[in-house]
Image (cartoon, rainbow, N blue to C red; front, side, top):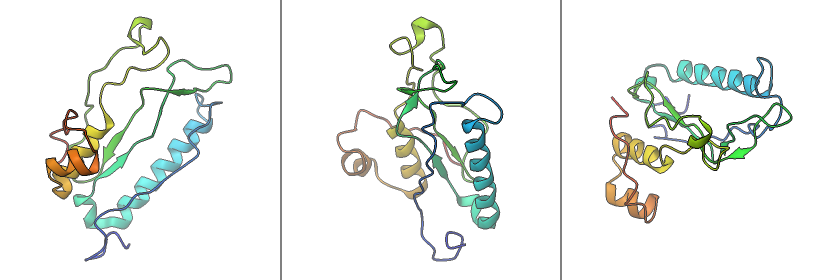
Length: 159
């Protein structure tokens, strides 16, 4: 309710742990499925609570590390390089995937075990911060993500 209030904060950061599971991820009742179900409930609740403010909302979901492509011996995955991130909200141009799909053939995996990173996560954050909050390119490259001028902001993310 605070986020939807007039004069409320323009943004917030939330952490949701419990994703570093390593085991029993792949079945319909495993830890990954359970975490995703809880995340879905949280997003639905956020959308409902924000009401009309949802139309101006951008939510960035990201992780600090990826997972291996291949399953380990306990039906899970271990720390890897490539991962996933996504944005949701009423201000997002949704229903699409961005980035190049690197493929899953053995010769397309990073070091033969990880999904090859297709995008630099800083580019996603730069695009959202620039287009949603008006952060200048100079500030993005020098203050928010120092020495990152070689990482372009993603474009066409928001309405």
